[in-house]
Length: 354
Image (tube, rainbow, N blue to C red; front, top):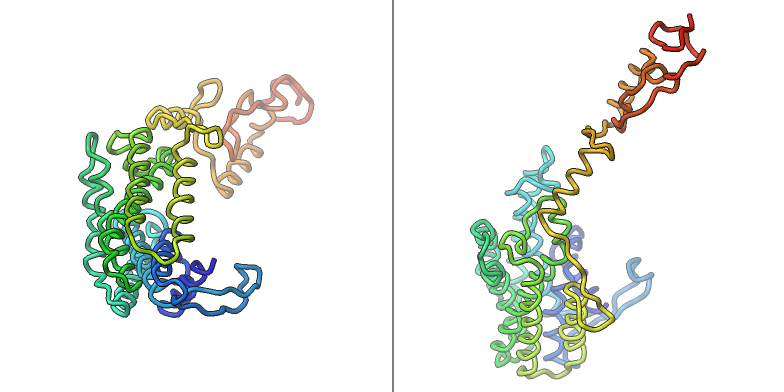
């Protein structure tokens, strides 16, 4: 919590209150690694009460660690917004929002560059590496190696981790941290892809596991290999206090992999993944056809349904017609008077009343 609040307040101080929305849990690893090298010499201060932690005070991390984490959070947020702008999806697809989203992405990137300069980090190469992610995804197809898709993320996280060694006053750890950062980037990318696999299939969104044809099963050994690589790299580094770094980058990382990809132990049973294409086809069929295999139109909105309801009532279709289309749901309905009644005097009524 101290590192999380330190990152949040660093974003507020250096980039404004709205930048606090970009707080990224993965970026906390950078702040933790800097503190692990400094030990008791790491900067900290007491923060005032906050509603997000039950109005309690908190001892928070300060200095280079939270600044490095803030740089990473702003860079990732800027790249994500820029992707939405170029793809024309999400909020950026709404009229008038595209220009505002582009402005926000540029502003976040400028703030990341400014914070990076204050801690001696050249952000431009990192931004260029993240920018290559879109080109890699566009070129990916069946048979493309997953490691090719995760390469830009690995490059950016490797350099961010390596700079944590500089901020921690132990440049000899840069090589080990760079290897750990590459493994961390690959692991984070694969975890996100596996967690979003079913949702992306439902929405028809791009997913590296589906686009390359690898599927979740092929990503599982890569994720476990990244765990082992990260653990080996961190064990070769010289740290003053390994407690929190081991908890976050070893125990919790194993927990995330077991929860997402399944485990051989009983605690985390392996989850069965739906077939990408068949799941989407079945869902589209259920959406478009009812149980009797009649084509089901898309439901009307409130005002269109209200107009249809008025027409059905004024023409007595809701009471006299054998079948009619529901005004809002557009499902097949049966008229309440189709078998004979004395509720109306229209000529269309089969009950013969005048």
